[in-house]
Length: 288
Image (tube, rainbow, N blue to C red; front, side, top):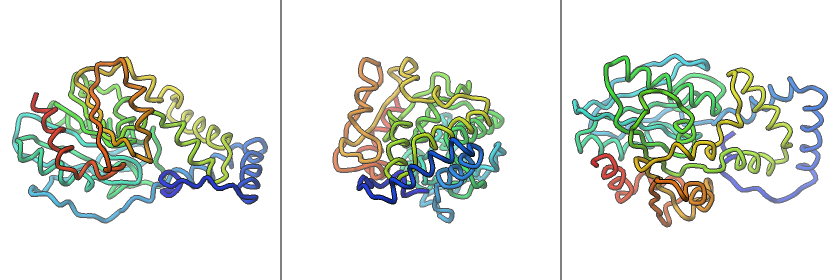
């Protein structure tokens, strides 16, 4: 549910207290039913399904199989030697990158992007971080199968957490840009969901269920676990007033690493990707 994660709703009410009690009780009495309901409510982003790219180059379209369904992928070919991959955040789609795609194409880069599962023109009814990682690696396999190397990746929000957690060889030594990256991804998730009255135990139960389905551990996906992998090839771009992903938490997370941080003002969580100065700084990062 999109509104859960993007709106502040801290006002207390008897209904929220009752919902918290009821959802916690379900975890204790019927954990399977609890996680199934939580998945249905919390794992559908209600992303915009119909859109058009506003790009100068029409993309080649591909369909990539993943565990949760087919993912729609796009290649904006400029017949350049350098290839850049873009990956969007929660409840968004690839069209968010239209201005950036045009800029990178103009500078001679080939650009790849895709809609995460249940987002945009991709299939599915359930999405989560494990699904994001699965879709990302499926698209990386596609790029590799076409005989291309990857020179860089640009991520927005949750898409950045997926990239941090991918072990795909195509991402080795690439230059990375993390726009509006959530340093406290799971902490933010717990907080936002608790604001509508759903218990913490419900979220934990859901995360454990999805972890079992992917034979993984959600705790290991925390961005803070990947600080040691940050290098001088990494650039973080974050607005100081971002109300979705906290700037201070991000700044504290990357302090002491070789990663660079560009601060912006009055651009919020989304407008950065349309800002000419931000787009220019991304291009500069890849021209080095």
